[in-house]
Image 1: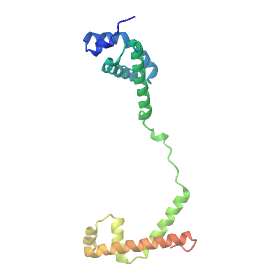
Image 2 (image 1 turned 30 degrees about the horizontal axis):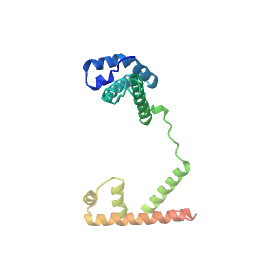
Image 3 (image 1 turned 180 degrees about the vertical axis):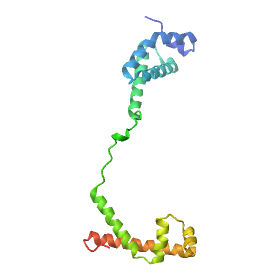
Length: 188
């Protein structure tokens, strides 16, 4: 039976660390290779296990079990923890753009959007010319209200009022059109 090394590691004896590596390196390496997905991961695991072993060397008690059992259990627990972590955080994999299947649009949704577009155009045409003009400059051209005022020569307060009134009328018109369409009545 071999003399335990871990009590000497716990005391910080430098040569004990080298002896620990020599004595348990093969055991830990074989466990890591069996329980790791790759050689690279096994190498990282061995390093973590030895660091963990040196940090916890003072926990070894000869009266509770052999040193090799202590090392084996500590290594196995560390490897199982690594496996669980890998399952929780899988390696990201690139997606080949040619393999991606995009869902085809649902025809009924396309029809519904087209009908909304027709209703919106009909409602927009019902607005007064000045309301439609400021709303189109805002929506289609992305102009701020101050730029619309400059471009049209209409005071800023009036532009704000025209836009607010036009949006309110559009909303009402769209709601009425949706209700009539849902009831099977006349579309706007």
